[in-house]
Image (cartoon, rainbow, N blue to C red; front, side, top):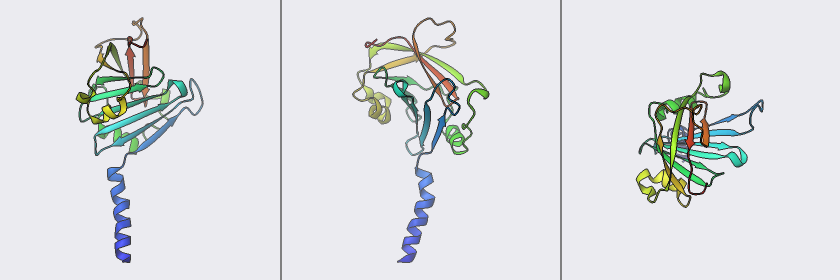
Length: 185
């Protein structure tokens, strides 16, 4: 009986890291320019990364589904979800992101690190009618929330863009800007 209990305990210790997600918290320690916090959770079993940005009314949640190739960002202030194709050249692979999180290489990099890659998307003002094409994870996050599709603008720069944009700086790795309006604006 003791052997069974010890074996089950050891199995739990060694199996948990293989199936569980990893979290990393990135806070603004010196409170310059904001007081938010980001955390990332990686689920290797479902090939999904979740990024939460907790900053009061400016909070958002982003989900990167590596299996379907789509990402979605739920913007709480706008009460909307924006879905887009993942740019695999700019966004790290799930394995690379997982390695950065495990090694805590993102901790404390902030402004002194190399500048993040920038992506700019234009938001289609028409609502998405069928979320099923984006996969179960995105359906779970965006169901019941007005959802819009965004297309990447190649070679675009916020410096020259005069419209409204919502910016997400994800873990000092990639800056994603969603520009344009939705039916609610």
